[in-house]
Image (tube, rainbow over all chains, first blue to last red; front, side):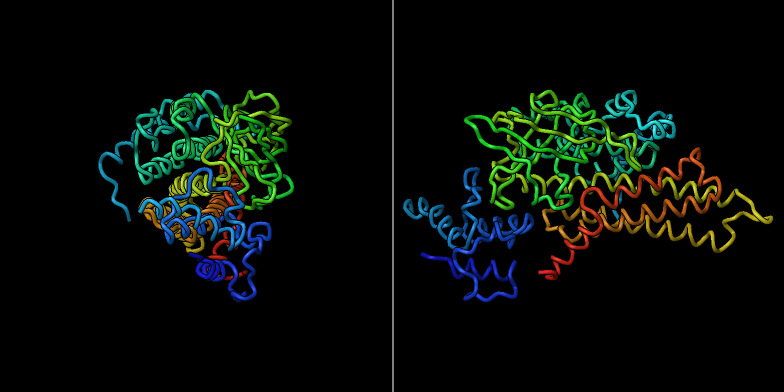
Length: 87
Length: 381
């Protein structure tokens, strides 16, 4: 299940209030562009952990997991898969 | 206002007894810009470095608020502000993140020695080009097997010339943004690390500061503090405590100055009356009282909220701004009340002005705090 819409809404509300969902490409680089700063990334990680009940471990802090809306969606899907399989 | 219990009050009174010894020679040592190892030994004996840390690692297991209350006492009784700054720097820069993010091995090696004062700690964040923009750091750590290779340099490293261990923040991913930075524990004697000479500065002169240079400095993977890519998570946690620890010391210093000014205004006579009987002088002292109490309330309130797990991003910025600006203003007021004497070095009040200015710069400048509050209000996007 894709969460692109939910993630995009969070990113826009928190970091890009003047941008529409249509304007924000799924693969837009949020880190290199400076859209998400050091404070923002803490907020983003906390939100992903809370909203999707995902525990973000040591290896998961790879910036490529949080680089874009699509990357965050893929990371969440991957992180939740074992739980789904086991349920 | 917090009501301190008998145990907390007793701890604070115990610390007060060290005040005279900790303050000895503070004006001369400021002039010479010397770090006093003798006084560091006294600091070790006070036990103040142990306060917030778990007893398992040699700490006293005191709460955040009790630690702040004792640090306020340090500010009130120790006239050597540089020494106090070296204390809070060691606790916040190294002890705090090692306890929160460190492995048991790291705690055994570092935290036990931070608690005892055997080790002095420092952190290396700022770089020459980036200044307050920590995201712009270019010091890099490239993975090579079980090691990371550090290259680059850092400036404004408080405790640098005397520190035994540094928490160094370096870029581990070139375009990883805030997730591209990692914290490392780097020992002073690590090959490839060069510690610059003490840098001359305006205030806090008894707390030495220097640059650090990394030239193919190899750090074992086991020296990563927290997670690879989690440097800003470590830094965020540290900065919250650093601000509370170092600025509550300023509150104690302001209390000391207020007491001094009050005493002087009641005893110093001019035109046949105590100068405090003149409204122009009394109002300055009242202003000092208001600024001091405002800073105190903001810091303890923020500490309470942080301890309760609440989001204190805005509170912390306000508390830092209010306290640092109050410290500058009240230090200038003290000089003015003491007149010509206040301007003379031997009274130790002009030094307070120079020390206070530092607080508007370190731990995020006044301008950065304004930016942060504006950002949290949804401005500047």
